[in-house]
Length: 151
Image (cartoon, rainbow, N blue to C red):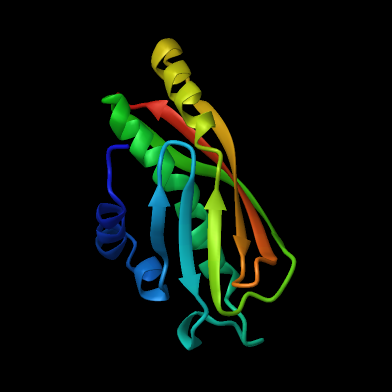
């Protein structure tokens, strides 16, 4: 693990300020799992008094992307990353503190190794599940990340 939770949260402040001001915070990261939280507040809510779907999406994407960023950095190679597709399912109103967990970090290293070995871009589908304080799933996001060598 190369980058700390604190460094990622500082990165959010400077590079993703809308996520920062909405309360998106990385709480845990290793090579296999990342946990991001966000709390429902008046400035990140929709007209139905629950968390706006895009705020949930920022937190979910961050839980997947932090691991991609970290493992690219650990590879020492100049590799780009971009979300190619995503899907989402909303199963309950998101109120209170929502915790998004992605446990798909194990998929990243193989894709990076394949990109380095073949020079061809790779894609990875990663899932992030958001649960409320009662442990009830409120939303599930899937992101298709594409990675490729720069240059």
